[in-house]
Amino acid sequence: MADGKEESINIVQFLKTNSGKKGEGMPVVRNPQFYFREGFCWNNVLTTYMKCKKKEKTVQSTESMSFFSCVNQVPEFYLISLMNSRFAAIYVDNFINSTSHCTTGDAKLIPVLIPDNEILKSCNRLFTSAFELKKSVAKGITTDISIQSELEIIEEENDNLIACLYSI
Image 1 (cartoon, helix red, strand yellow):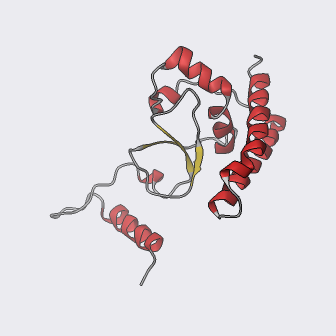
Image 2: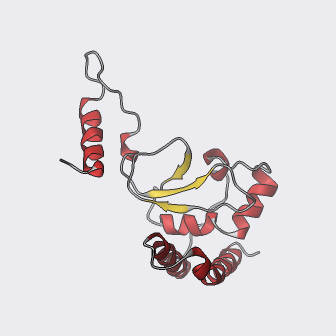
Image 3: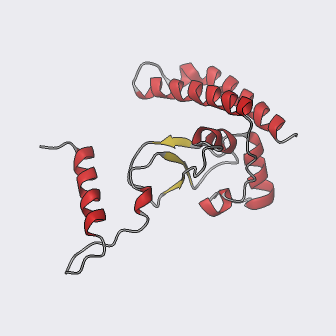
């Protein structure tokens, strides 16, 4: 018996292969390029600060706000770093949408500067550090409480990096 992930992949492959074929019950698949693609997401209802996270390969849900990078110059770890910054939170709250909801339409209005390689390396280092800490919690190696101070240091460093990039 196939595991759930393999079964899901097989079902999606069937849907893609048979999409638009004539016959009763035949599927119509919209935007197949986004199936089983990594990206990042955040919850629509939030406090001032967005908390984006890496999204593993999965079928996308309408319940989660999801984005994908389309260009190599702006990788997803950089976009996650930007969206998780104090700059993005304040920008969205003051100029885009001051409610507790941040939709994909709102997030598309955040100005994204193309970073140089030095900024990308710094963002990648910070992102990887935070991601590894959160993975250790997910694996039961540690707890959210025990990594809190390390994460706060990473978040502050990220805020400073993004503020410097945007000259604020």
